[in-house]
Length: 124
Image (cartoon, rainbow, N blue to C red; front, top):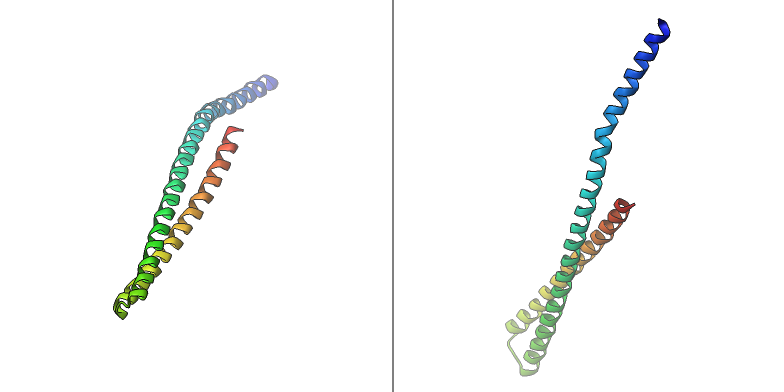
């Protein structure tokens, strides 16, 4: 009788362990595909952010060229000291904007690399 009780109790314990693992495994597959979908969405967002940052770079460099041309023309034509100071301040502002865009681009590229790594891990 002792062996019979041990067999019954052992099978109950083993059955409860198996039953508790089944929902976790079923949710794991669903969660895996959900993670892949989210990683792909993050990659698309990061790619769009990188594209927008590069567009901002082109615009800022164009504005910087225009501000330098304006300063050069004002210096050549003998503009007032206030106008020259304003032109130089505009150049400094453009350079600060370029530095900010460069920082954003670096961050977005880093996020893209991390999200790409996460996607590769989820696909394994």
